[in-house]
Length: 397
Image (tube, rainbow, N blue to C red; front, side, top):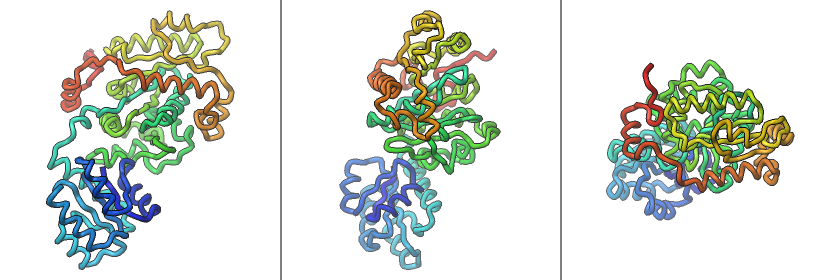
């Protein structure tokens, strides 16, 4: 992860926008030395224009001996021959003009590539890291799946977890509009990158309040065709290596992109409402999951609009699906009202009964440490390395 040394907060924020969401900022070289003492895997140090050139050169000269895999990148307001000569003598890897944010991002990515070449790719990145991936799915639209995914991500972030919300409804995703964010980049941009790694992926994320980021769906529905299914799997594994929780909102279909999310999922939340068509579709979905060998131990049943008076009961739902309901979310007209106002109910009305129910669901996920793993870690790492499916080994028929 890169670290920026810059006293000016506005400049530091601007530089960090080019280097990714995991960037750390410290105000001085002394603070940097303390910061690096506890971070053996730092691959890039960016020295801002406020850092004296002589002090920057002395620091870089020391670092190239003590940590040769860590790249020092110097930012100057103006780059001339004297600056370049000093940078070369001290072992700095790159010098970037202050206004060249694209160049800064590329320099940090090259630093990450160098670190990987010298030290190898971290095993946890290939295996998905320590983060947990929660996929929210229903085979039928209109059950409140996106609303639940968005508010669940907010609830997990409120519990002091770093969260990334991913919109995998690639044709008609609504995460961006629900959060009222206007991203400059989407998951479709990942398909344009030749070498996708954590540093480049972070540039595609849109920050949304503390601890929470979003990777949104393409603006154009036909962009779905440009996104390979295998790319989705790699994106999710990289995100799991950097976030405590990755919450995935899906399309209401068993397409290849959704199946990739299932492969990477630690928990699958199946959303239903109290109506016969939805219940029938979800029953068929669970049978399909059985055929796909998706473990029942990872499935959780969520009842949305649980207090609707429509002749069905929670007990009937549990009996039909042979599953216990993990969370029941009540009905409220304030949920769509909050969404339409551009502020999900978890933020606009945190004490509301719906917000409390979603908070309880988030806390149950946090305390659920006994989710069964179908494969040992070593098998999962081998599956990731070889490119085959991990959990969903479907028969070729």
